Each structure stands twice: as C-alpha cells, then as structure tokens.
Amino acid sequence: MTGFDPMSDSGSIEEVPSQSLKANKALLKARDVQQFTVGADDDAIRLDRRFKRHMPDLPFTQISRWARTGQIRVDGKRVKPGDQIEAGQVIRVPPAEQAKEGTSSRARPRVELTEDQIAFARDMVIHRDKAAVVVNKPPGLATQGGSKTHEHLDGLLDALQYDAGARPRLVHRLDKDTSGVVLLARSAGSAAFFSKQFSGRSARKVYWALIMGIPDIADGIIELPIGKQPGTGGEKMQVDEENGQTAKTRYRIIDRAGNSTCWVELQPYTGRTHQLRVHMAAIGHPIVGDGKYGGKEAFLSGVISRKMHLHARRLRIEHPDSGILDIRADLPEHFANSMAHLGFEIAMGDELVLDDGRAPPDKTIRKKMAKAHSKTMRKEKRGERRARGDKRAETTKPGNKPPKAKARTGRPTTSKAGPPKGGPRTR
Figure 1: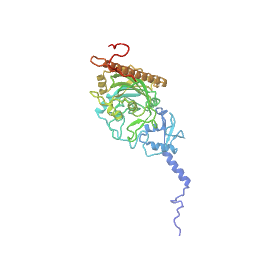
Figure 2: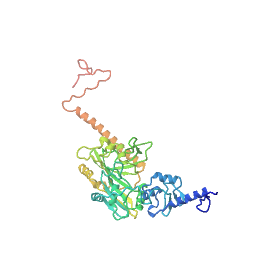
Figure 3: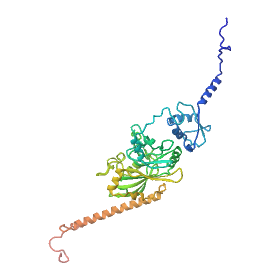
C-alpha cells in the first residue's frame, strides 16, 4: 500500500531554500519602500526638517533610528538627520505604518475657526505679500500651544492662508507676554529662506522696553551666558557662567523719566529663550511688569500697567523675492498709555539708526564704561564738596556759636589771671 506522496505533481509542496525565502522577503519589503524627490522649496534644508514639513507625525526618534541603521538613504548614500539636502536628490524612506507624505493617520482633525477667530487673526495682519504674512501679536497670546495652552497664534493660521496653497508657517516666536512683530512664511521655500536669515543672524530685530531705574552706561552690551534654571522644567532661565549658552544683547537708552524708569531699545545678537528679560534683570534693571525675573521690584506704582512692557517694534530681513522687508508694529494699548503718561515721544525711538548687526568692538565698550565711571566719580566728588559746603554754612549762621578751638598739644587753652608776658591782652 502506498501512501500519499507530498512531493508528487498533484498538490505538491516544494521545499524552498532559505536563501530564496530571504530574497522574497527582501523583495516584498522593497516594494513598500518609498522614494521622494527633493523639490526646490526644500533645497538646502536639513533632512530632519524636511520630514517635519511633509511627515509631521513621524517622530524624530524614528528618523534617527532609520538613519543610524542605514534605512534612510539620499541618492543611495547613508545620511544623518542633520545633513543638508539639495533639490533633485532622491530620499529613500523604509516602509512604516505612517501615512503617505503630506498626510498622517494620527493627524488631529482640522478645527474649524469661528467668524470671530478669523476676524481676530486677520486684524493682527500688518503686511502681506506672496512670500510672507506679518502680524502684530498682542500680549497674552502664546505663539504656539502646549499642555496647558489652548489659545495660540499657531491655532489661528488657517485664517491667514488666503489664496496660498497651504496655511502659513511660523519661522520664529515671541514670549506669550511679549507683543509685536511675528513673521509667517507662506510656502516651504520662503520658510527655508527666512529661517536661514534668522539662524545666520542677518535678520535685525528691535525691541522697545520700559525698565526700572537708569543704567550708568547709556549704550551698552550685555554678554552673559544663559541656561535653564534647575527645578523649573525649562520654564525659567538664568545667567549660567559654567553651562549656559552664549548670549549677547545691546541696549540703548532712548529717554528717561526721572530716576525711576527709562525707555530703552534692545537688540538681541543671539536668540536665547527669555534673553532680553534675563539680561536686563541681571544688570539690576528688570523690564517693567516682568515679575518672573524682576520680582516685586519690577512694578511701578500709580497708573502704570502691571503688564509686561516689552514689544518687538521692528523686523528688518531680506525678502526671497529680492529687496528688504522692513516692518514696524504699533505698541499695545497698555504700553502706549504708559509712554504717554511718562511723557515719552514715540518718534524719538524710530529716529535711532539701526546698526549692521555686529556688536561694537571691545575697545569702544571699554571706552564707554571708563567714561561712565569717570562721570560717576565726578558726581560723587561734587556731592562731597556740596556736603562740606552745607556743613560750613550751617555753622556760620547767626546765633550759632563758633566751634571751640582745638587745644594745642602740651599747652593750656586758657591763661591764668593777669595778662601774659609781652604786653596787655587785647580783644
């Protein structure tokens, strides 16, 4: 009796070599590999930034893992997430569960804005062209959302799409309580262009602030490294000489109101978190209303608002379509009211010449510091002479007895009865 032969022609099962199985798996895997060609809008940007633009829900850890294991290739070569890519290059992306480029299976549903939200967003616009939208952000509105922040500028950008193919992109940020100029890019290409200007420090940003007290130096440079303050979760920064990042700020006094406060122009030469606020507090002149870094000493009494008086007044940056984009943003209501109450004229601030973005040389700074020190010493000497003069005037007033003469060493201050030798005593 013959049994069923599994190797017969009818319903046979052929044993496949292990190498062939591996080849078939590789073939199936290769069919799921995606390849994308870098477009002109993504020219000269980092590889990880391209993924963030076109696959926003793909975590950075996944990108790093693929790059580390050689699964991401650019023109067939291994790359790192921070490597720069060029237009025309082909990016190989391994198969994954994420959706195709430009979409996401985990993307949050698009929230429809109300008519009031759309009107509010568009009222902020102070400039619009083919490449950019510029808004004047009010104080109290965060630039981006967070765990406890649900109302923010980023959530209103759908209202500012207008006739563009996509919503505009943020290319820089302002603190929640800081008002003023915020630049939005209307395409991936313009976003890359503007981002390069900010990272290369060629974009010029001018802030206005009211600060407590009057600095001794009217035009100075603050160069103090800044790092995160331990125990605050990164919510608060501090001057950190050992581990902080380099930070440099220029300030210029525009006008002053007695000795209590003054109006200054601030230009950051670096872009550290809370840089202007930390630097001004570090030199003993916190920004008015900045209780976070200035404490109780950062508030003025009377009618001056307790809100922070820091405003991004001006942005000057190259435009991708040639030329220069130079935008100014009006002050918020509380800041403008404080300026009027203190007698400051807005035109004075706009008359200052914008520098080229390079800090003055050290020799110039030392000269200014020496001049300020000499001025302080002269004031102190004048004060001492004035005090001595006031004291003399007090002792010579009518009715005041003149001070007794000091006794000479070894001699009596008065003589015994009878005139001294040498003749009669005269008065």
